[in-house]
Amino acid sequence: MRPDDTAFRRSALTLLADLARGDTTVIAPDATADAAAPFGQLDARGIAILFADLQRALPDLERRDDILLAGRNHDDARWQRPRAPVMVATTGSYVGTFRAPFAGIPPTGGVVTLTYGEAHHIVDGKLRQSFLLWDIAGLMMQAGCWPMAAPLGRPGLWPGPKGGAGLRLEPGDDSASLARVLAMHDALHAFDGHSIESMPMDAWAEDFMYYAAGNIGACRGLSGFRAHHQIPFLRAFPDRKGAGHFVRLSDGPFAVTGGDVALTHTGADYMGIPATGRALRMRVMDFYRFDDEGKIAENWLPNDTIGLMAQMGVDVMARMHHLTGDAPLTL
Image 1: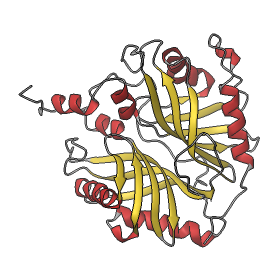
Image 2 (image 1 turned 90 degrees about the horizontal axis):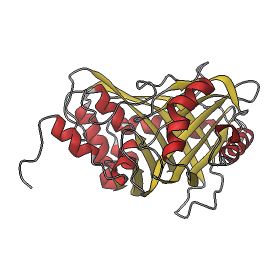
Image 3 (image 1 turned 60 degrees about the vertical axis):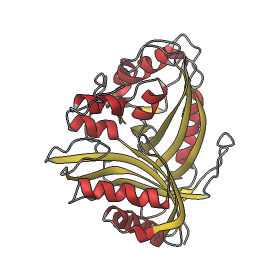
């Protein structure tokens, strides 16, 4: 089946729900996953273990997809690793009652939401390649054990798209939305290193919503975006630039890109961590919804906060263990 086939999209939605319920038969024997910290690179067995651990932690686990896009994975010459020709990209939340530890995070006994951005290559009803950006930092915040500075934006559960049309079960246009996104990326790369006004923001609606995971948080409109995310980010990483997308696709009024941003931490502190002078990579996904005027009205940003901090020399997981009473007692 092809991504422009409604049956393919419905089967992908079912496959991912089955996996969340514990059906590991949907994982191909040679499957791989590139997951956010603390999980890393996984083979088929590792993927099965990860989902089993999640289900053990949340026995009443439910997967809730707010956006599901599918289509041709447009090329990006900067991405040098194997590239799937067709991908399914999703964002939403795993919901359940937190009954047992997950990733070392102590259970709360109450309802939690683990938000995610994911991209999957599915062949003959099996997962072959996946990218998993799960918001482990956000789960720590819900459990009261986030050991770092609080986000500047608003943490919490991301709303789904306005209008509720994020599950793209009927194929949409294959290029228009992505072209707008890539033009916007080019505009952001026009930053002259000094003036915030050197980056045109005319691609965005006046009161757009920006839903960032991890230790960034949500903000609204240009002033909120600049105050809570863009300016702190540019001050910390004035040389930031895109380093390649593993996924690039359009689907009607939606588009998604996912990949790495290359950064050098030479400027101000970031997320409470003083400048390290280190060269870093930040893994992100961006899901976009365009309004009727062709402006970006909503942007969801799953990102690997914990992996970024690890490159900055801060072991967030170790600090979390210390905070929850599991500190090491030997050198």
